[in-house]
Image 1 (tube, helix red, strand yellow):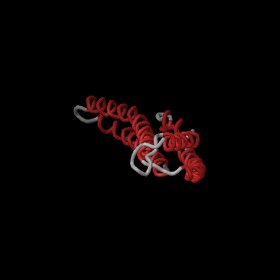
Image 2: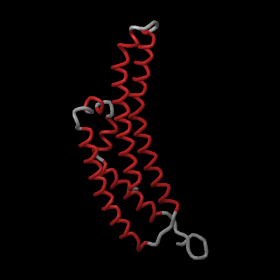
Image 3: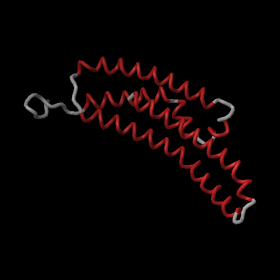
Image 4: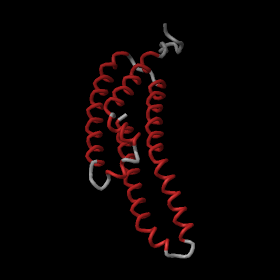
Length: 162
């Protein structure tokens, strides 16, 4: 789970910085293209492509988040553990929630920089998920723990135990 949380931070930062770089390149490139032959069409295509990239980047992060959640739930369903390990899972869940608080604060510090404030406004889902990351991580780990212990367990003979 910690890998998924760190991956979400990396994906969010990469998308935001990529969009910032794209906007800066577009800002510098449009005056140069406009003076060339066929510059009007090129400027229109460039603006259209930047709009597509801006709109799809937030959804890309959301898909990464959902895939991470599904991966946790499927992994939880696929292996069997003794109930004695529930205490360990709860302690790990608390530790992971504390780590996600730190990661959420790192994200908040990075996106509050004056350079990125205008770019971050294009990422409402990413901002919401990263702002509520500790609560979401706690909910996902709780669901994972429930899935681990609710499914039917196999007994020593390989059949379902009652």
